[in-house]
Length: 349
Image (cartoon, rainbow, N blue to C red; front, side):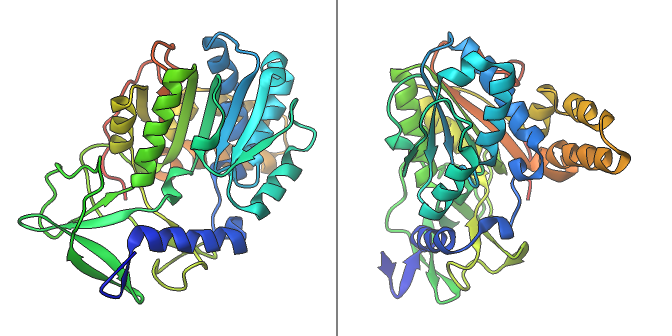
């Protein structure tokens, strides 16, 4: 959709990211937690095993990953499950939500021989078949396209992309579920990710139909907050997000408060958000790092401890990244969330 020569921001972002993931290696531009250390996948693999037990050990169950990248997280989880929870590993039917044919091929190679059952791929979370499910989505929501609205004294303007800059026009429609009741000062930006809200509603609907737990880990904020968070990375350096569409990864910080509200309104139990650092520390990340480090030469031991700090320290990924769970009503709180039903955080930028 265009308006006065401009393109709506969410349409621009979707088009640019589709071209980017089809034509470039995203891991040349950024590193995700599973690529930083195998400990991330091992910790979450153990989380899957305990969560599966809390669901009553369904066999089979769908072990789903949305936005699986190179397949590293799923491969690390399956390696851990095959070793310490073989019953859970045998019961898991692997489903991956990935639109890029190139990345699907990479994922197939990473998972070859690791899954007990054939792996299936889907274009959308909503396409995953019904049944008992545990879903993980690490840095999935941040890449979904957003719209940006600018507060006026009365009403809202919307930002459109025009060339390599923005054009602002009176908003003709406001997306349902957007947090337009927030006290945004005039001139400030409010971001709405309709696709993320749709994922929350669809996830809650299926969690009402069959037992399941969905873990979302991403960078973002929680609370009645606002601000312009659109960003681009190219060759591991910040880039102007409106220049050279398809050549940089476009993302925005996840509005966990709106995501949680949409999931709750649609009938899911919601736990969190908590910080990634609190979650990983509570699940034993630092104990695992010390266990691995003790068996390694000094240089390798230092790298292992540094990776744990990078994942969980507040001044690194530990505070900016948040974790939230949507679950079927009545299931026990999943590991790492039992003592923290909700955590308000500052608007980390």
